[in-house]
Length: 181
Ligand SMILES: [Ca+2]
Ligand SMILES: [Ca+2]
Image 1 (cartoon, rainbow, N blue to C red):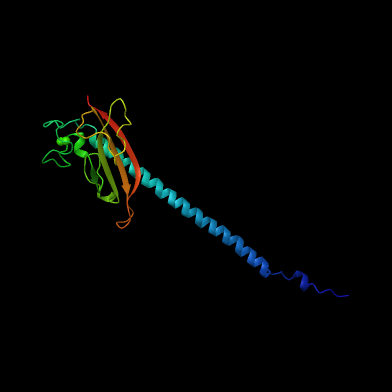
Image 2: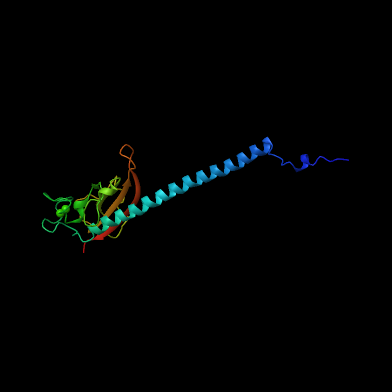
């Protein structure tokens, strides 16, 4: 009796179903990896924006750190910059009110051209020193800028605009209160 060994020893190929299943399994894995990569890239970008925005808000805080509460020459008569003052010569807190800096500045008030997609929006508002949360809505002030409360809140909002034709988004906000003393 003769056996035909060829049929047994021949390597069996993949069936269509197996091949299809393998394609689906590999495909699903690749898709998941691509999705994960997308999420990671997005998170990474968000992290970078936050880090830059925190630095830019610190720059403003440092740039305004040593300013007088009122104008050294003219006192508190004008809320905002006194006549002839520019960013380089601003010498009291309220000179920075309603200022938009784009490109943003460093702590020495120099523009950082490389970060032109970011901007710093600064507001300065009087607050009651015994109620530091007062007058906290910039859009609807409850204390007039001519009221001398003896305290002011400075708020910096750092905005990011990926391209000129999309609206800027707020990335980070920081505020602090300065007392007149
Ligand atoms: Ca001034
Ligand atoms: Ca002023």
